[in-house]
Amino acid sequence: MTRASAFFLAFAFLAVPFVDGPAAVASSPFLNERSFRFSYEAVVSKIPSSARRVEVWLPVAPETDVQRIADLRVEAPSGVSFHRDSEYGNKILNMVLDPKGAENLRVRVSYTVRRKEDRRSPGEGGVRRAGQSSALDRFLQGDRLVPIDDFVKSIADEVVRGKSTPLDRAAAIYDYTVETMKYDKSGTGWGNGDLYYACDIRRGNCTDFHALFIGLSRAAGIPAKFVIGFPIPPEKGKGTVAGYHCWAEFHLDGFGWVPVDTSEAAKDKSKKTYFFGTLDPNRIEFTTGRDILLSPAQQGERLNYFIYPYVEVDGKAHAEVERKFAYQDMPGKAMEARRP
Image 1: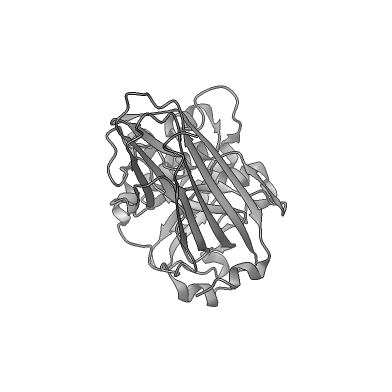
Image 2 (image 1 turned 90 degrees about the vertical axis):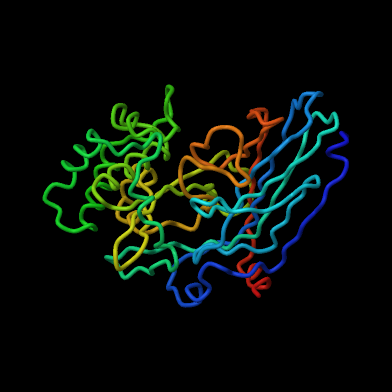
């Protein structure tokens, strides 16, 4: 056992208060929900013997009116603190360590999660998410890999031609994305959320799908945001989660944010209508936005998106990080017992 891993501090936050809209939880007519335990583990390895400072950033799952968090536990060496980034308000766990010759460092965060079906379709009497309509200008601007330029605007103009309302324009962009893109992770270049790649190659994973949807929406004057987390297998039980899943939200004046999942709709066209304004409960949300400046700020470049651990050793990005994500379903009443 290394010196760094020989001692761990465990933090347990029981019955975490619901801070982002508690009134909506009791009154919303959600059809489905799921309770599960989710664990997020990172092991930093191959730390140079000369290293004097190791800094780790992890995303922290937030509470929303469809996602309730309880019994948050952190197992890590000393130096743990919690922050929010200034641009998007994402929750961040930061850990600073003097490794003193250690070759590896482990941190594990676990949550009890109750995730409800997120139904916010304005055409079907969906429930508006409260308190998230601020700073809309940011969600009309481009990102490094999602530029809003004349080329993108020309595509958006063509897609929304003849659509008179923001909802109709968003629906047209959604249809275009689902029908134009193919979920295909073969070859190289996919997975970066590159709008030009999506326009040229017309295939990729969820990041590429939603880069196209977000870019065209913004070019059409509709605020749109990138949201990322993890998929939970629909089969109840327990197991590991291989990697992230992302989706998007667009904003309608007088209603609020509306979720879409274009890549899941493309995988199963029978659910195309469902995923325009509704998200299933088989997921956990972590962060919003692209080009992320962490808190405390990293020395390296802004992150394309923030879902996996980010590590710097003596101020330089360190890629030797193993990660493991797992879930275990819980009885429905398990979450109720922890309600404050």
